[in-house]
Amino acid sequence: MRKVWARWIDENGGSLESVAAFLGHSSTQVTYNCYFHADHKVKLAKQGREIGLNHLQSLLAPPEDLTDRLAELRAFLERSEGIYADGAFSLRHEIDRTKSARPGRWSKLVPAPRLELGTP
Image 1 (cartoon, helix red, strand yellow):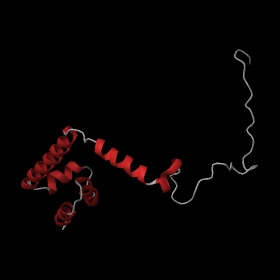
Image 2 (tube, one colour):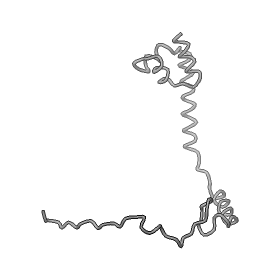
Image 3 (cartoon, one colour):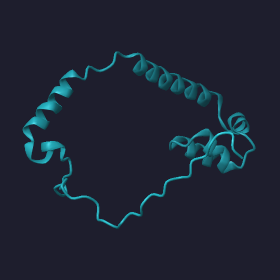
Image 4 (cartoon, rainbow, N blue to C red):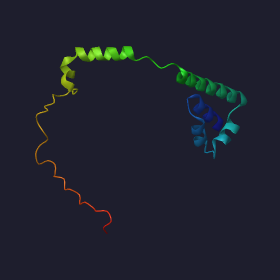
């Protein structure tokens, strides 16, 4: 039954670590050696190589040219004067820059005493 559970976990996207933890093994090496058939180990190696090569290919691919996307964003911002005018990016309410914070809400800062170098 333990091998069936190990297979179910593996077939449903579980990692070797999750199988080892479920079975209570002291290390993943025990799980790998005892519960994975040689054919399955070859399949895992091929999958790992494909994943690694795909990631390497994405890293080596030329960077995407963002010039067109930036031009589209700039045009959108220029057309949308209502919500983006004067840097007011708030969609919920207008910002009144003439009002300051409520008076008396914050306590005044007390200046820290100056320490002179060389004095105890």
